[in-house]
Amino acid sequence: MRLHLGLTRPEGERTDFTLDALRRTENEVFQGIWLNWLDALNQEIKQDFAGRVPDAGDWSPVDRAFFARIEIYRAAMERAYSDEGFSVRRAAAQVCDFVRDCVIYRRAQDYAAARRFYPARNRTSLALQTTAAAILAPTLAPLMPRFARTLARGIDGVSTETWPRSVQRLAPRTRFDLGPVLVFYAKSGNPHLDEEEAL
Image (cartoon, rainbow, N blue to C red; front, side):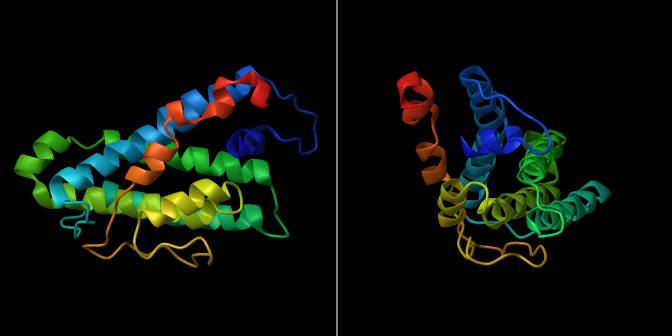
């Protein structure tokens, strides 16, 4: 609900709210993109690294560009929440663009082949994606506080109480378990979108 309202709230123009549009955001954006990416990442970390962040290995130019993209996102969210550039719509749009970029980065990796032939590259990709997931918690806290807190609880050392001044990679062996956030936000567990009366 907060994500959808953030994307559609009026800022200098009138906007409409419809239940169909809310459901599209929930199904196509939050469930279809955000949670699918987090679920795939969580499964890889659980399967290959026992739920712990791997140490990065070899870095490709694509990996370095993605790490730079995480910092660009962090800085953009800082500007969107600032007094000078405050815009909830811009913050919501920025995070949606960032998560789409995370999905594009992930899809460019052949994990089945990397696991066998390029394990060092595979570790780097997964380590960077855990960093991307971790940065979502504090940067989303003003917009989606409950989601941010639930996400933070699944990653050791991540807090929604302080703003990150820069992007720091998660330390190797950091606990990374997004099971609770994935279960909590499973579609079957969201009665607000199943019952019009709730709205």
